Amino acid sequence: MARRMRHGLDYFPLDTSWDLSMRLLKAKYGLEGLGTVIQLMQMIYREGYYIEWSSETRQLFCAENQIDEPKLNAILEFCLGHGLFNQDLFKQYSVLTSQAIQRQWIKICLYSKHKNLGIDARLNLCPENSDAYGQKREYLDSTSGKNAQNSESLRDNFGDFPDNDGDFPDNCGKFPQNPRNMQEIGTEIKEKENKEKKSTLAEFCAQPVENKREIQALIKALAQKKSAFPNGPPASK
Image 1 (tube, helix red, strand yellow):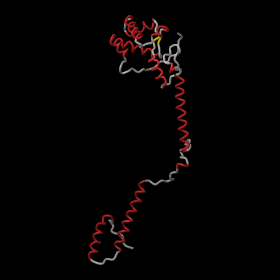
Image 2 (cartoon, helix red, strand yellow; image 1 turned 90 degrees about the vertical axis):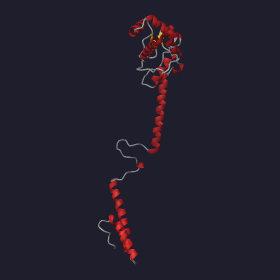
Image 3 (cartoon, helix red, strand yellow; image 1 turned 180 degrees about the vertical axis):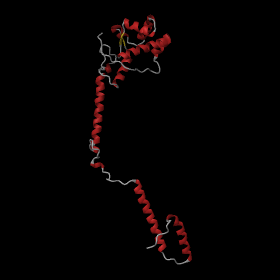
Image 4 (cartoon, rainbow, N blue to C red; image 1 turned 30 degrees about the vertical axis):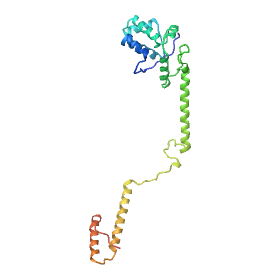
């Protein structure tokens, strides 16, 4: 087959529980069988969604993973017979791939920055994903359209935002030129309260005294207010 552009991934996910085919593989070949399949998948995803399985590839795989060729051939035959790799494409084109591998590759690429996501028509086992790049563009265009609609709605409700001058639009109101701080406001409130207390005490003191009981009550009231007026009560006007 002609040399193609590399569409490999930097990672691929593994299921936390194996399906029936992988469980049978483990039961027959143990961890060596599982490790072999995982290494093959790693090679496939590193290149894209398939690899060409030639005699050179087989020899290199045996050398790098320290497995003898007859054992590798037996494990690979088991995988082809149980659907872990597609047997028809292997016989026709000598490639290792599967429908699950292609779907996983498409799924990852759709949410990444990969381009040219189309699968070779001869190897495509996922007709629903025959135009993955077009699907990605359609998704991005629809998302962009929604964002544009949201921006238009904001402009209708609040008007255009200022460019660089930092001023708010007229319909948002304006702040006072010299806003008072909280300390000044608190001082005014205290002064108002003290003024009201002074006025009340002055009015009480201005009332006529008719008997001794009223004098005693006046003295008691003055004693209670003494702490609030260290310099003595204000003179009545």
